[in-house]
Length: 340
Image (cartoon, rainbow, N blue to C red; front, side, top):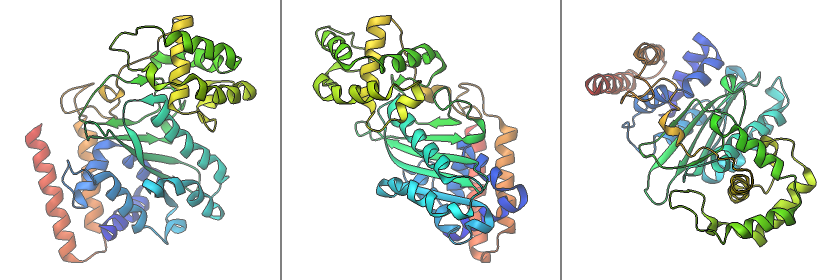
């Protein structure tokens, strides 16, 4: 898998440049095809972590020449992402601190600003010498045992806290506190504004909320919030006076509970409601096979597969491995056509 991932990366970067590799990894359909070619069934639970791991290991040692770098991974390895980025600063044309802050804010968004019940355990940050980047990260829901994958592409991100994803993939949908939805724009502004208020005022409102009987559909649970513990964080936000929601989200110590608390107060005091639409419903980059939000763009989808097929045909690997790879790609392509 490592050898095949290496050769695919070399051919794509040689033919189209490192930025194209980022675009493809941010495409959920291409990423899935990539995992299948490497030997995974489409529904395998390990396709995300293993495909990213194979790519990272495959290009190890040739990253400066390739102009493509991979940092992070699963579990404890994900927390090494900043140090892995800083380690290659000498090969970059930009300050590594910019990439480190980008890596951190994407994780903060998917864990705290988008509260969908999936806790991140995998964070893969892919970047180029010039500072272009993509993110593939995955969260797990311990209740339903399903995983959810989040794709980002830097060149398409205009605002980290407003519809920033290329795609969010999951088989399960649920009500989610989605503060990065476009419908949550006012809620983000009010939440950031509240973070600049004196902690005593915020705690007073939180204690009022705890005496209310909220409707069952409200996904923000008052019982999850302890006013006494969260007061310390409110003191930090008051002292820092974050100018906007992104700054608030990026602050050390500001986690999901702080964001939920401020969101609750925003709704109670100002009547500003955040979005509770699960973004997995509309965030696919190229449509969904069930027609939502629109049918799959087969031309783009097929182009991704054909580029992958061409990459394999040029790969400098053993004939037996090459034939096995072709067989897996053919089987995947046939199964997809049957489903469609």
